[in-house]
Length: 312
Ligand SMILES: Nc1ncnc2c1ncn2[C@@H]1O[C@H](COP(=O)(O)OP(=O)(O)OP(=O)(O)O)[C@@H](O)[C@H]1O
Image (cartoon, rainbow, N blue to C red; front, side, top):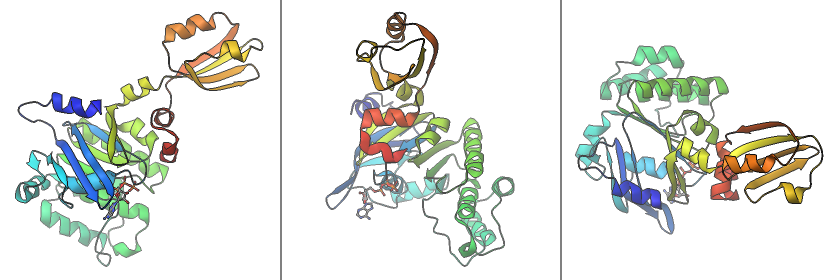
């Protein structure tokens, strides 16, 4: 991929990246869960790692945390090479991790779980986070709802005030209010300088809060760009209201995709230059027009095929 090549070409001499993957590869039998994945996450950004189920997101995260060994290639996390256990352990004292499945000791209460992590890494932000996310503290974790487990996980991931937080599908199963609360919190953390790396298969969430996105599919990185670049490549969402009927053969141009021409309203995604669209439309009696950015899931479908629809 050109994006992967670019990451190599622009490699600085002193590496300032918070996370850098360099040909990171993990093979399970015949399955290439990560196939020579290379990219960098810069300090103070929210980086969305996006892909359909089974794409390889969790594998990357587990490799970055030293929970799996790479088949080939490597990565650094806060400057520590993931193959060097001691350096990575030191770096991880400054990393927060929210796994997809929270492996807390089920019989302990939430308070006891937090005490355990506090002894390991510190808890200077515990009270502030508990006020925001409010998991019940005096019940055993086995009685927690899915949402409360996640709330406890978020407090655990941030309470030692790490420089980097890695989250695996953090909002999955959360109600919209809790999702909103987490999104706003992540934006505040980013503004305060924390680097956030999170995986998701929910495009709207990535579109809303991420600065940059890496898209993984079948173990390969297929895109690495800012949200703006991704949306720009996806064209514009256009709705045109016409005064009278038009001949579709003349009205529809090659740059229009997903065209719906119903009655006197045309809706389509326009992939050409805006000026050319305007020059084309002056031939028609247009009574109203609306041009906006497409949703990321539309972009995803156009560029990566229909298999990815499940990711919306
Ligand atoms: N321990 C394992 N042994 C064999 N295959 C595995 C193992 N773990 C993951 N895989 C396979 O590797 C591929 C990537 O899986 P991974 O869990 O990394 O994907 P994912 O993007 O996190 O998916 P999801 O969104 O469903 O969590 C899948 O084909 C999966 O079946």
